[in-house]
Image (tube, rainbow, N blue to C red):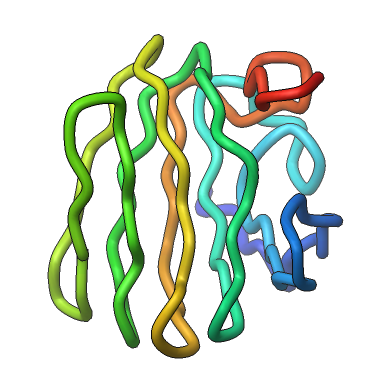
Length: 120
């Protein structure tokens, strides 16, 4: 039988400004460890510390543009586009120009213990 997820869990974010994270499926909201699905809303000027996660992260931008920096390149991923960052790659996300809304899917599910943010 299908299982309805009536609402997300709101999770505290990292970064220089508050970003809204709504986890629909994952360790916090559903106890799912295989993957997490979250809707993110970041304000203009937001940036988070770099990280080297143990999970693959697929990001689909719904509104605005997300800046994605790696050790070798930097790119803008805008509404209607997506990006994949593989486990073990260093990455830093930001929304320097305008508000940004996006969906992040992590395999396995995101956890604070496996994200490995810079400075931790």
